[in-house]
Length: 166
Image (tube, rainbow, N blue to C red; front, side, top):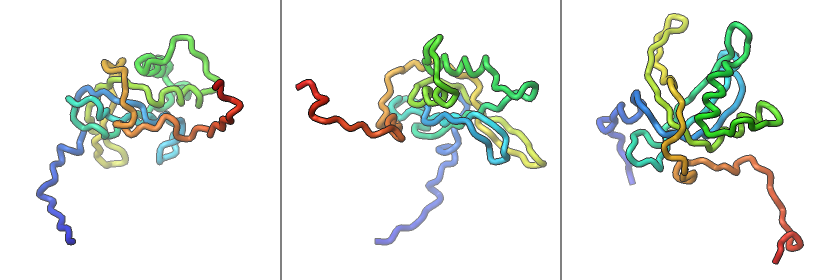
């Protein structure tokens, strides 16, 4: 059976996330470097598909946070605000920073985004920026609908018949 491409069917507005508020779930949170070698925190946010009255369900919003030039540390106010919006608990302690970032995975929140133009090395770019992070209006998440596997990378657990109470 043949298949013919028809690019007249393409609507560029289906791919460019519009400015606005979106219910998202954190798919990944990690510390690393950008392609230019600059340190950053990288949050992969997925626009929720289980919220049926919002566009762009399943699209990714990348929210990067860079260390401050003054002291090389991440802005604690923004980071704690992000943690609060994601529903992490006040006073919660973590064994290390990686454990803290792992706590974001699977958490719902509401973000406001804006498309902004920027330039770097003489080239113009349009970037989608997260401007505000808030607590989700819909804290119950259908993880399967959103392609989130909370058990990915987890350790296998072996249970023998002796471990069971029946």
